Image 1 (cartoon, rainbow, N blue to C red):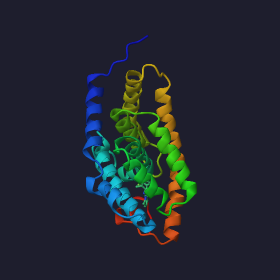
Image 2 (tube, rainbow, N blue to C red):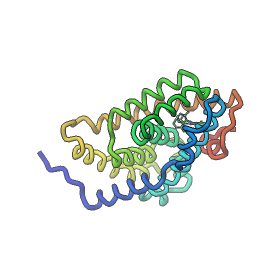
Image 3 (cartoon, helix red, strand yellow):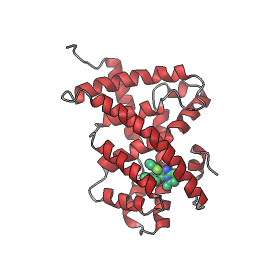
Length: 233
Ligand SMILES: Cc1cccc(C)c1Nc1c(-c2c(F)cccc2F)nc2cccc(C)n12
């Protein structure tokens, strides 16, 4: 059985990714509002819009700190961000939801999401995904790497130099594979389960697009950043 060991370069890469992932969190004042404001559907939607907007800001900052990302073709940088925003935000909100939140906040956030005018057909897959991510009990390194791998998906629409993206993603997949073996020695299929989450994530893009359209139809307002990242309005 070959000994699995993280090389010095891989350790350096992992530290950069985790540092970037930790550096950018949703500001406290936004999450604090979760508990204060009252529960009207409009209030809930406004709060979720604020959280979504700050999640996009966090995503952009994290992405800029992924080693090599800023040396990609600029058009491709935009294509990767727009193509992965929904998946990266589902991943991060799933982790915040199932991990970081103090007890009781999770229930409050769940309640607000359920009462924010989102159709049931989206709520079910959303919470199923949150649950399936929660059950993995990912460590921070795995969360950060999985998010970086999602962002560096070469076959997003309009990406021109896919090989350049593959060259960045490849070492991260290798590193995540080693990490999984080291962190979950008793679960050889753990790495495969993590990648399975990425497949489930792709299906959520569809639901999210539907949700955006239905919100627009009901004349919900978005922030300029949300309009820009998802080409709405
Ligand atoms: C912050 C949040 C948390 C859980 C569920 C939802 C619906 C939200 N909010 C939104 C999301 C979104 C996200 F931010 C993370 C995960 C999945 C998402 F649907 N996307 C958008 C796009 C326009 C407006 C909002 C309010 N919105």
